[in-house]
Length: 467
Image (cartoon, rainbow, N blue to C red; front, side, top):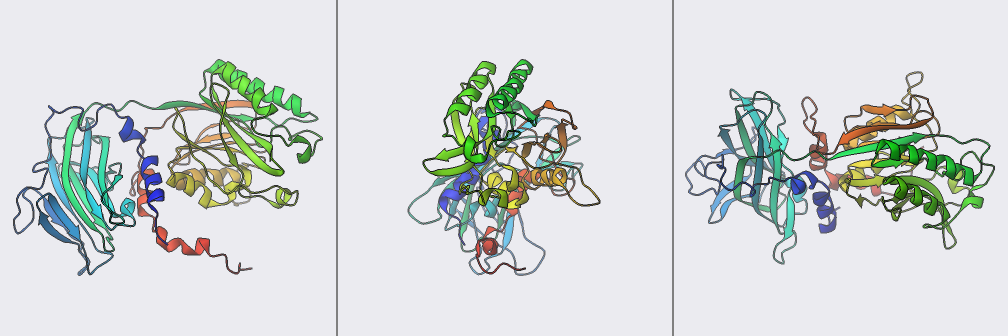
């Protein structure tokens, strides 16, 4: 299994929000001192470029090869596909709490997986000791095709990082992991004081509401009333449940099938426009002669700007004749990168992983099923939703009919829950917030880079299913 250029770029673009939107990138403050000495790797001695240290792994025979080049430092390992190594420099003059713009550029050739192969890490230190063992990975690589050789790119890492509490120094490391025949040319590195990036705050809401003895029309009235309440609170986006024109009625799925856009999206769109907010809602869609369990994304102007067709269908749905979707779209919005899953999708961990690899920051989950807390030691819906958020490093926002509708952060914490009460709950989140696990680091950035995707072939093996 190999990466395609498209899949690599999807990952790169999906994680570039902080660096791309920062107001003070490496070039924004040209008069600020570059704290990196010999940032272009000029000169060469027996130990490598002056002011840089070549680091090698402790196990024998596993190191990359380093060579001088007129444009920088070449790194490869022609006889050792899974070699590792890098260049590092100790940085002085760091001030705790100060932000620093970090940029590294270069070229990579014949690489099938640059996302996993090249890393730039900044580890802040206090009296020479790391303030956190994992440090921070710099966002990137952002890739531009270079030449006609397959797998050849110009790359750039760029990010704005805040020095850890108590930090008085840093170590910047340019790492190469498992080149597998590829060649890396590191060309330049800078680290300069910068202004802090602005927060990206989003007021996110979710609804817990299960109509009873109702009709499709009354259901829309009830859910639109929740959107009016969200408008009074100034929320940015609200998640409604699955199949909102079916739940609590005496209708069958066939009775409420409709095109998208259609009558229900018109009603929801009017409420979205009236309250100047985004809406996620589940509907039963008919496209030509094909029925889908679908969720729509409606913008502040009341227009349908995206939809997701439920991929994983339980027996209650495929026996009725619903057709599975086959795509996992991610929607770029003013709020951030949004994805949608529906109910039974949460049983399958690959779903959240795919959306994370495609850059989703928030996943909304219209859900008929449950988010009950654990019972008798068994992991129930509440725990599984929290684990899905934690696994992928995403915000996860289910709206359910049993259990609790919740807003869950990338560490798996429940930020808001209706706690069994009907109505709307919400939380303000900051999509620029970074939080590290005690040893591993900021999982959102590390997880995708540590995946060994070529080993995942069994996931695509449609062979005999074990009993």
